[in-house]
Amino acid sequence: MFTLPRTGRRRFLQAAGASVAYAGLAPRAALAFAEQKKAQAPGYFRFMLGSFEITMLSDGLNQTPFRFSASNVPEEELKAYLGALRQPTEARVSHLNVCLINTGEKLVLVDCGSGDNFRETTGKLTESLEAAGYAPEDVDHIIITHGHPDHIWGIIDDFAEEPRFANADYSMSIGEWDYWTQKDLESRMPEGFRFFATGAHRNLLPIAERTKRIKPGAEIMPGLQTVPSPGHTTDHMSVLATSRGESLLIVGDAITHPFISLEHPDWEPQMDMDKAEAVKTRKRLIDMAATDKLLVAAYHIPFPGVGHIVPNGSAHRWVPITWQWEL
Image (cartoon, rainbow, N blue to C red; front, side, top):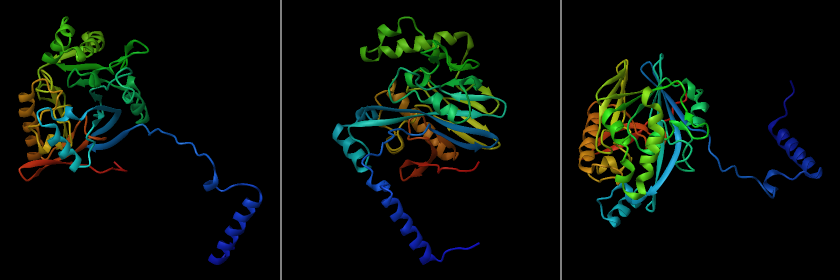
């Protein structure tokens, strides 16, 4: 086979380029318009935990006032802290990371995203799930950490007006279920948050017969144990997944910020219902994860929201795991 020498190849390519120009075809750099796509790929990240296959699914992102990250800290102190870390000081961009566990026998979701009507930038779970190779009807069981919109509004498909996960059963802590299904809850909530109650009723009541109300600490199935983590909401619970000696602590909203939660666990997120209790829970889970060297999945830490919590002087820091191309 004949191959042009390097200098010959260069001359050949130059001549070919000249021919294109003479044919009236402009090179790409000269095009007057190149359409920008303004879209990302569906988000999923997969890794093995013993014999369990874990897939982190993106439900999109939510933007909240930056003050929501630490409501008990002077505004200037919080701005200075976030600014030093090159973080936004006008709004908090919070990711929504849903954990899917394939035990080999069951397909289990921890929470089910925000659905169709929460925010324009959320509601991506079904798209991410399908990109990861599954359909909503494949899900066997859903563990609900708590009743906030971005964790339960994905239960009902608002277009079909029926449960999105047609074959799934549910587990939710009994205290959390009782709180969010109270008949008069809406009238007792602050005006700006009454839609939380309306949405909880819309999404939880249709699955009442398919939902097992449990005490936090109960085992859902072999390898999946719930962990009490109250404070963010009345009876919030986390999940500990364990397989072949490897463990993943899925903390829900008990730990919400990659810097503040670990470096300043006493700083209180605005959305924590019982702020003092939430601080105790946060410190306990941080110590548990660091001491036992657990892998951690957090719902609102930047996607995929999986990493380790390691000691850092008198506090701790978040160390995200790196991308894995092969399982």
